[in-house]
Length: 152
Image (cartoon, rainbow, N blue to C red; front, top):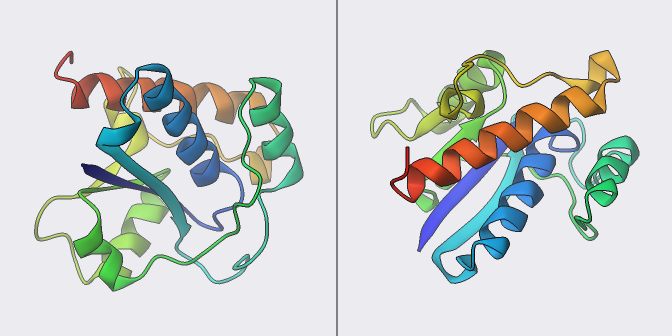
């Protein structure tokens, strides 16, 4: 089983979107038994809060349910528990490395690195553009799954 942890600043917008998009893609591919997928935050600001309503609505618009998800913080132990820790932007990566004590095994990556346009996932917290974030997350998760399945 492959363990993936998606990470953003608060774990209420981008990383839970990625968590549930990836779960949906994996389910549709018939690969649920091969993956364990979760998400976490680098900060403590939103711990215990549910997915942000506009992000929840965007997922629901595409038939994806994220009910029951609450924000949690990334821990150093997560580095050992997961095969891949996927950040949404470069600030996330810096904070992930700090929390995890580095990245000696090369497990920390940017989601958009699995696409043809590397960089940051658009942050809807600031832009309020949840469609742009959705498009980035979907493209990144599709690219990640293709890579994992050896098609990329």
